Amino acid sequence: MSLPAARRLIAALGPRKLELARDRAAGAITMLVTPAYTAWAREVLGPDATLVVIQPVVLDADLGRARQTVRGPLGFLLSVGGYAANMRRMGFGDDDIAAMSDELADAIATVGDADAILAGVRAHLDAGADHVALSVFSEGDQPGAIEVARAVAAVDPTLRG
Image (cartoon, rainbow, N blue to C red; front, side):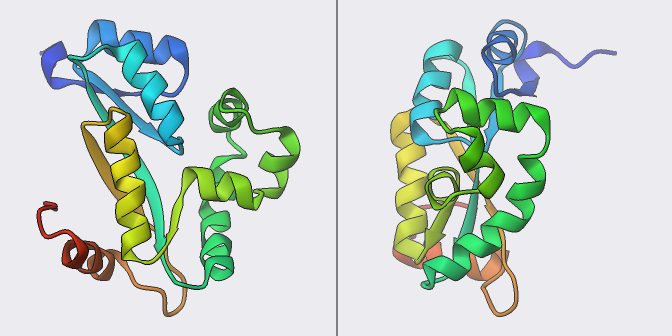
């Protein structure tokens, strides 16, 4: 038995996958994207499709350390062809991708305090996302997922987990 299209979301980055998500599913899930990309994905999907953005975050006031935390898992993901190709579509060069430049890290992950994380969520929502799921990265004494959820909820208690 097949799952009805209205109950499916497709992981999609490129234009063909987004069109497939629009035409054969209820919408798309994206990851490692900028708010500008989210706006473009919304245009491709149209107003009725569901758009979910997975947003990597690190709660840490030390931006250098937070970026370093991001670089570990994202460095691996960017070695996978589809993610690197999507970075190029978003305007990043091979040098940015290879070095995981600060510009690239800051564009696809939100680092900083709870206000910064909330601003990153709002940027994707304002760009057309229906939902933003936080993917919390942490190392050492950086807060984990539960602490991040509590910190962000303290800034905006209207958010739901």
